[in-house]
Length: 277
Length: 287
Ligand SMILES: Nc1ncnc2c1ncn2[C@@H]1O[C@H](COP(=O)(O)OP(=O)(O)OP(=O)(O)O)[C@@H](O)[C@H]1O
Ligand SMILES: Nc1ncnc2c1ncn2[C@@H]1O[C@H](COP(=O)(O)OP(=O)(O)OP(=O)(O)O)[C@@H](O)[C@H]1O
Ligand SMILES: [Mg+2]
Ligand SMILES: [Mg+2]
Image 1 (tube, rainbow over the protein chains, first blue to last red):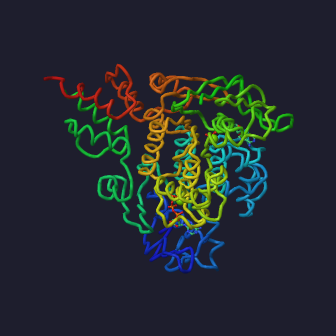
Image 2: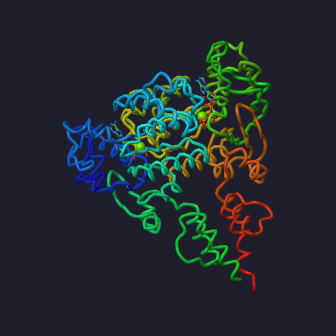
Image 3: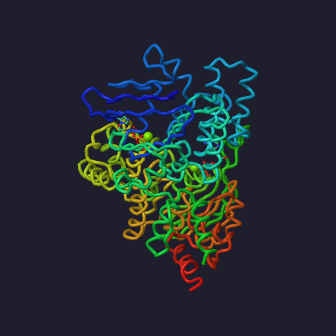
């Protein structure tokens, strides 16, 4: 079954303003990991806010889990979706980190005992156990992002939307978070939509959606997307490191067959090449 | 303007039950006109350190010397205006920096506050908007009706409009798309060269440290654990990885190749250097 279906979606913020989303169509299967990429202002955050009814489409339909998003279904649908917003400060409601992470669970009427366990587990997963009693506003940038993520991990919703959720984490922290969400997804088959400007991260997705000027201009596997040079140009994207290196090695006369999304694949190939000589 | 920290410690909420260590006995010097990167784990004290650069935070202990200004915990809040004109900070959550009703007024606020006429300030604002890659149509829009990356650009424009001599950047490219990220980093480097700006950059992008900085300071738990050049730092991959700070992508790749038996006498920091080191090992063998 499709987890998300978007049909002819248009959105404008003000009556006489321009459409910042234009004629968007796509579907996401349950359990897919989708990366959404594109220029600043291309409409990525606006799109995700249309998926959980924070914004109502000017035109078109959003169908979540087979249910048409409308005033009647919005609360039901919101329960299925957990969003980590671009700016974690817009998300915090609790006086302490712990309360904050518990908030989403309280809203979902989870029994107290279970709630306690889940909050503790989520904070442990993002390595913030020691900060449980702190005030979210008094954390460092990366710590705030970790707490915001814990809030969603604790809920474990069917659909997880990450809006640049790791943009302020150190490289190790970024990888840790991706692994946490990947593990979660393996166990409970969540659908993940991750908005990111980190192309190494996008390369890990099952599929990439490319936004440009309010349009969805491409959808495909990372391999498909990253081999379309004109598309990359148009959307202001660069290549992940390994692909870029392979292209430059080719230019330097080292011929390598295929495309290499990860350093691991490329190193393997270079090793093979070297041992053949 | 040289900047010196002498035995600086900072404790959040000192003398309360929630007291929390921010910085511990920091000693460092940042030379005028240099490009310094400050790196370290989440929560290591980077943003806390930056806020000492314009006396937004004052040391609990020790002194911060910025040009001819000395800041201690006794410094009062009067007469900080000249310092704040010279030291421009782009904060980590740049959107909190925005407050005016239009983008244009927001960018113009700084110059006006420092005595430039309204019309001239708005002119500077228009110019800066373009400099950070935003179309003119955003000039009269509310800054709160912008996308995350657009807000960040407005905040950067607002700081550049002050024409500071020290530019302090707390993860300035977080939230920018890949192309803009490159353009913005190029812009900062160009300003440093052309106007002899001192740049202090907090970043988690080790490629930016390798490509732009001439000086790097590594923080851990509020303390300085390295004060060196990027080249020297990234040639100690064991140290770097043990402290979880990450390597430039080319360096990381080279370390992995080395483990597979490739030769790397000096670890490269850029793709170009990596290719230079790699091609002889792939071409000439067996010939
Ligand atoms: N509250 C708002 N009111 C009016 N216009 C808005 C509002 N929020 C965003 N916009 C505009 O809508 C367009 C899309 O913004 P959106 O935030 O969806 O972009 P984005 O792709 O998420 O960008 P970024 O990568 O910078 O976060 C932009 O042109 C932006 O200026
Ligand atoms: N306003 C505050 N009140 C109390 N403690 C704070 C406050 N801001 C930060 N801290 C704490 O001080 C320490 C250093 O925080 P700081 O924000 O300087 O880290 P950082 O290196 O900038 O991290 P990041 O990379 O996550 O932004 C952290 O342990 C943090 O929890
Ligand atoms: Mg956005
Ligand atoms: Mg910080």
